[in-house]
Length: 426
Ligand SMILES: [Zn+2]
Image 1 (tube, protein in one colour):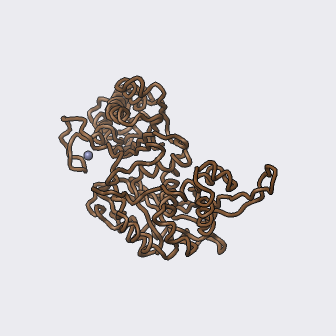
Image 2 (spheres, protein in one colour):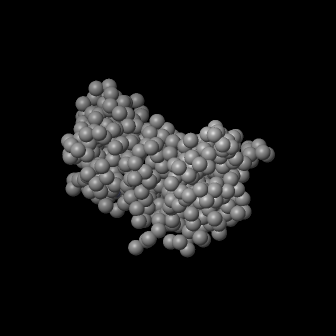
Image 3 (tube, rainbow, N blue to C red):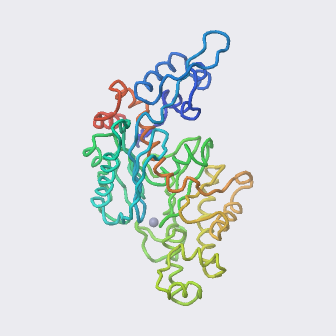
């Protein structure tokens, strides 16, 4: 049994910085009151955070009678983080500040099934150009965060299985970036990092219990419980796309099973059902689109449904209903207040989401869904990059690591030390 996930945004530095981040500035007295920590601990943590570039002494605050207290300010611009998100047909590569705000971003078409060497090599060349384009007075780069479409072993930064390409499985993604940049590097799956981005800067901000659903080629998900992203014992929490939903699917899923949720409700499956309806002529609208030389994918099925095609509406209704029946089980276990979808494909009132909502409400205890909200991400494409940045910042500030590097002033050049400490703690 693994006793430590290697990712623990806890300890006493984290709540201090978290409050500074959300309010922008606070006095020491306010930090003591709001965190419940002693003044001595708050002062120690602030000294570490100031030394590490995350905070600075600000202006003199409002006096309440005696000497006016000095405020401490969060420094979003204290350092930069390199981030990359690998999607199913493209990559997004960027530079963020410490608040996860993307300060520069380059997107490129790329099929990650071309393998890790091609994909990561392209990310490295974009990282290099982003670094070269920075002005001389830019802050230091403190770390690298990478989002991968599939489960990741968090402690090693290696994909467990992704993209149905064997070369990715167990590929040393973290070690490759560490060797090249000598910066600490963390890797997680895309749905987890999108959910983390939403928790810190998006619609999940301030909420304790959220279920995040990603409708990509397959179905991914992430769980926020008690205000924290839950990765589970092996980093696979929320990966519900491969539960059995149908005995009728003969084709094998990339995961090795048959009848997976992904094979019924994922975008790839929706597109294939649509292509079949076009080929057989069952759907006149899809057949007409196909006759113009366009391949039928999920977007075409959504377009045809919006144009009144009953066959496309049925495909989407079945996909949404099946997803809803799986998610209703999770709703029973987690009682989320929000089910948040990524912004890639679905919209709130299309047949897919309508069937999903109806099923979740119909299959759950009334008390579990009476207040539940359904929403689509408004962070959109930047959710994963923002989440990747927060993962790096959270890790650098975790109690087992902050003390290792803060006395050096920055984590630059200390990647081995920082990662070895985490391995000892595992
Ligand atoms: Zn599967």
